[in-house]
Amino acid sequence: AQTVTQSQPEMSVQEAETVTLSCTYDTSESDYYLFWYKQPPSRQMILVIRQEAYKQQNATENRFSVNFQKAAKSFSLKISDSQLGDAAMYFCAYRSPSSGNTPLVFGKGTRLSVIA
Amino acid sequence: DGGITQSPKYLFRKEGQNVTLSCEQNLNHDAMYWYRQDPGQGLRLIYYSQIVNDFQKGDIAEGYSVSREKKESFPLTVTSAQKNPTAFYLCASSKGPGPTDTQYFGPGTRLTVL
Image (cartoon, rainbow over all chains, first blue to last red; front, side, top):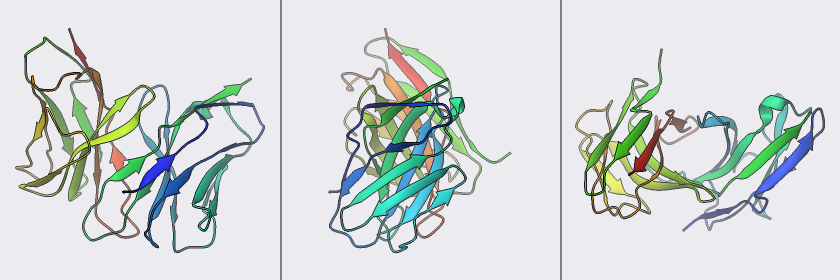
């Protein structure tokens, strides 16, 4: 079974600075999908960014980018120019591409605080 | 507006009672999921359904039941057999496998056992 590990329960960053959240995963599959979700205080889960394992290029969405290291099974999230609205829980998730719909496997999350 | 709705937002239950959490989606998604969130635990999968009239147990299905009679609806019943039901419950849906297989989440239901 796949597992996802987020080793940083809490992180903090100064406004306008850059922060990197870590995520590692364990899988024997060669193709899969990786996700970062954000959960602000409203508790609504919001998709931040997605990476397909067969793509070597790191995904980018505005101020959010990933560093995907397939051999190391690492999938870190970099937030540039941090804003107060970035304060939230961030969850890394893995999804198998096997036939049919398959659920996400989540890490335990990292709570990010943004300091004004 | 397309999206996922969950009701109620807050739910209180007495010990020994069954309660049902509603989840509806109008995204025309085939798959639906129920997750439970506890502090420090992340999200854990309770049940999921790939098509109507079919569903599979997740990692923590004991004490829960589901039905999928309509594509749009996937209600979760928390039974009296669930020993510690106080938690935040999230419903999600996705279209299918492939590049568009993103899961989208509803706003959640907070269940408290009195």
